[in-house]
Image: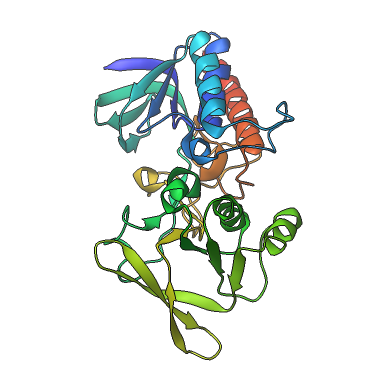
Length: 305
């Protein structure tokens, strides 16, 4: 069984930063990622609010730079799915590539997109239903589409789509938006973004591809059909904490509960980024979490030598 000083689970900004700091500290370190390095930031066409890039930077480029820097300092990586965590004097991480031991662990597995859970959503996934405007928006050039949600992600998606689609219907269940004021001002001044207030999607309809949405007004309970070629779902995220359920304390939403040092309920295990409770869910804060969690892990290891 392979053994490490520190294992980082998750390769987004928090995980890559944690791996960088662990490897630079001379620790034998391994980062386990199940998909692509960068997490959700690889879907961002331009990241404008990360310090050091006054003209913005493509999300996939930022992720690549982070991974390159961590690897340069000796961080080892493994592409595998983590299925279980077994705490002990040396913690065990059970993966699709075998079981690995570590004296300390930083969990930075992030979150996944929340679904609407309405008829037709799963049926038309990849055929008009998308959770990434940057990834799939190009396919709907000069067509009518819908975005579901009222937060920062929803408005960012709507603005992204407005550049090349004919019209964007932004469907929100309330009559005011939850997004930041700058995004609200941009979206409300965009002529081809139309707001559908106090409404929820009841069904995604179509034949081979999406052709319409059945939308219900929550105040009048009336249904109407909205003809669109695509729908982009942006109604929040769900923490990827399933492999750690019952092992680490979580809140009702599934986020891992941590203290001020980002320590979880199990000594030697830390959580960073979107997976932890009360995360701001920003790239900059995730990077900071990666630093803080690793520094805490290093202090913990010093007490056990």
